[in-house]
Amino acid sequence: MGEVEATWVSGRDLQLLDYISSINISCGYHAGNEQLIKQTLRISVEKGLKIGIHPGFDDPKNFGRTSHPIDSAGLKRLLEVQITSFLKWAKEYDAHIHHIKLHGALYNLVSSDKSLSEVYCDMIKGTNAEWIVYCPPASETYKMAQDKGMVAWSEAFADRVYLQNGKLTPRSEPYAVIKDKKTALRQVKSIVEEKKVYAHGGHSIPMDAQTLCIHGDTDEALLIAQEIHNYLINR
Image 1: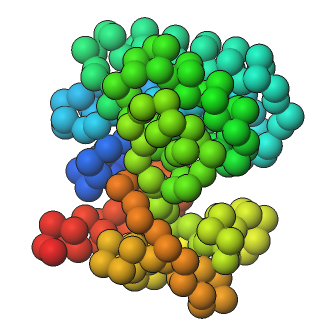
Image 2 (image 1 turned 90 degrees about the vertical axis):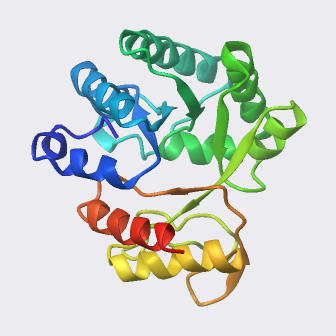
């Protein structure tokens, strides 16, 4: 969140905050701006949400969802500037940082690359070793964080369709994003109760997750969050 001015002004994002327990807030590179990020930080602190830093590619045109070539030095520079700015803004509201999660294409790229995952984890550990790393299960990032003695939480998506290899369906496919709240709930139930998810085509794959993600920029985010929240609190 902290990405889309229109959904904040309309009040949808404010409503959404009542149905989540942790929040990934943009650093302003893939989307959002300083004012919007600060507003999101302030309200998140007031509501007691677990706050996460959400760095991405410097590519607002594509909402950070298009991959770009990057080497270890480039990744370090990209992360340093975003984390530094975010921590400065967070300090204004005495916001405690609970976790960090990369955004979009950067999340996918780093999680599948051992060398980039090492740079990423070293940066986190050098900044604050207590931050939890939200990342895909069994990914290079997850394994690297564990190897370095860090805490990593496997993340599953409530509103994205999986491929049979366990990766997310590319957004170029028309069925990549789950827009129906009942379908999203079925996916969450299989993750929570069966520790598996049904991929496109019907095959199940293991999915042991500690955190669930909903994309706040989708039109259906609030309805999906409400549906999942009601399920979880009534289990």
